[in-house]
Length: 396
Image 1 (cartoon, helix red, strand yellow):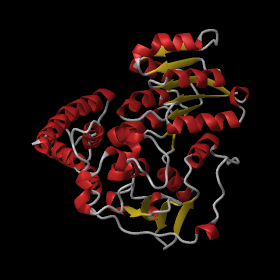
Image 2 (cartoon, helix red, strand yellow):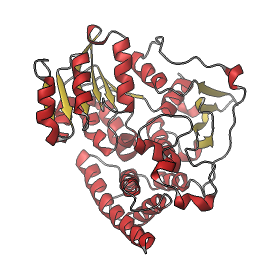
Image 3 (cartoon, rainbow, N blue to C red):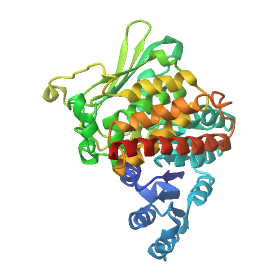
């Protein structure tokens, strides 16, 4: 029986993974080693019971007693905290979903790879902060990483067996987010509620705001470079309002291969779960006649400065991706807490990059998790300082 673990099981991607596993037979078809979640221990315990998981881990130590009580009599072990999550990832499984949001997903992802299985990677921060380290770990242990971000799954599928040398461009599509039609001069006034009204996708709060600012796409640009080993100048972003074309690969002979489908993350999750085979998935079939048209336009870098910052990050290389991600996460925290404005988020990242690019060794690749975490820690301090400065100016 194939074994699996789901990290971030109570989030959007995790829930959809659970849905597909249950539809495919659940505990009768898979041996579930571990499931993890955040503060929603009621849902985590239910998932653990449904899948008969060996261990369920909440990231919040204060919720451990509650989780234990909810799992009483189930046979599922309960644990809590970041170390417990990494320990759960150190339990061998054939297939591991990495859907923890943020840099917190890196350590368990590395731990899982050391057992030589398949890591289905929905945690974009892992490749952005430590892409070379993650890929080297997979190679050293004979493990495989399959992309679960819809854009990278699309590129992976469109690329097929063709070598990277045959690729002229990788084209990532972006919806443009909730504020895509706002006048530029109004963006500074956008509230959290405004930024969370995504026109196409139903996602969590953080990623929906990142979509509005285009920081999610900036992260995906860096991911593309790390995962596929393609040079930054061959990576493009286009605004595609319908979210039907998930990404495209343009080849040297002029051919362009596009991956299309209704906007449903179960496409990418199901592909990774069933790879190298394809199975029928509970997603709506694409009706091009009903859709009528597909539109594309170039992104405005004044509206989406995150794309410019991603290019600067890739040019710098080394551990600068960890700085970019940490600053982005801190800036988002400050915006969600109403301490800075929407457009201040890019300014926080810009200031943090400027301040840290001269740090000795920063443009060298990380050789250990400790190096990445040290860079992440320093960047968070500097980003917090920048955010507080901007917050004071905003308040004054």
